[in-house]
Length: 229
Image (cartoon, rainbow, N blue to C red; front, side, top):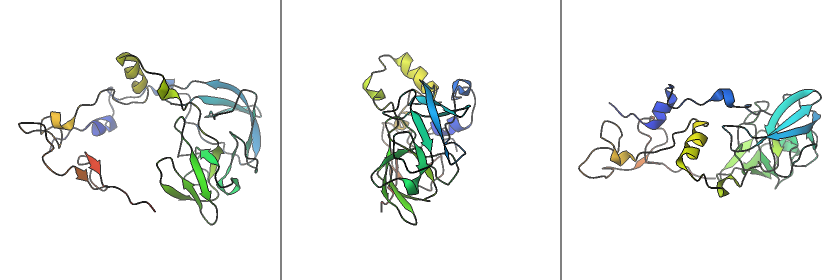
């Protein structure tokens, strides 16, 4: 059964959706050590990322971290401890309620998985056996108190205020993220190309809501909403 969806095509590799990873700076993980301090040496632009990166010197070892709003070159960043300052990295158990955080670990020591987009941040809601964090999506997430996070809001939040101005700029920007810069409606395709395709006039022709456990070839249209606690 044919359903050549864009998401499937991107996952199969090839030259069309290959990201220029040789231009990418770093995958930006939290430091492996739990105690220490570093100094911001420079702030750089990173292709493939929406936010700038901070070049941090940890005692002769150069590392890259997400730049935080309010930080500057020459500023000291602390790893571990209880000092609440923009850019510092510590465990969620040490961060007071109401503090904005980013680059949050899903499991202790994994280097950071959540909230890494420019201008985004999550909020620590409560602490106990589990730390409850309000994610940018509005979902409440329970995490291990030993998971670490960086304090503050990711820099570069005003990137959407400057227009791309031309299609070529949009193409180059999205190519670095391995994303297609044009999207064709499913109802405009043939039936062999998309579940919404076919018919003598553009209409979906059936329910447009799919369950979350559907196979990749069926996940088109709206996904079933997820209950919030």
